[in-house]
Amino acid sequence: MQRIKKGDTVEVISGDDRGLRGTVHQVIPKKDRVVVLGVNIVKKHQRPRPTGGRTQTRAGIIEFEAPFHLSNVMLVCPQCSQRTRVAFEYLEDGGKVRVCKKCGSVVD
Image: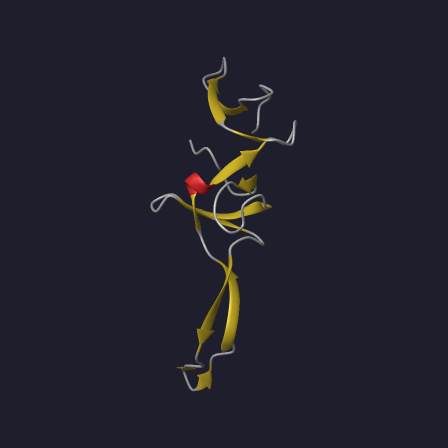
């Protein structure tokens, strides 16, 4: 089970965007990276390339969210609205849930 999942609200704890909060758009577990909406915006200069007889529509300067390393973000608890570490607890039926370390509430 992952500590941060798609749809979670996270806060950036290091880098130029420190202190910003956003929603997780994509998690890349093999590279330990996460894409957060509206955070870590980068610009890429891209040429139009022919694709099957027509030109590519996304040409010029493109802005998009670059991936962050997982160690640079922390989960924001939906109950207490504070950034927190994540603990795991097992339920009586054998399921596993994420728990806020500050207030003890279930995050899932």
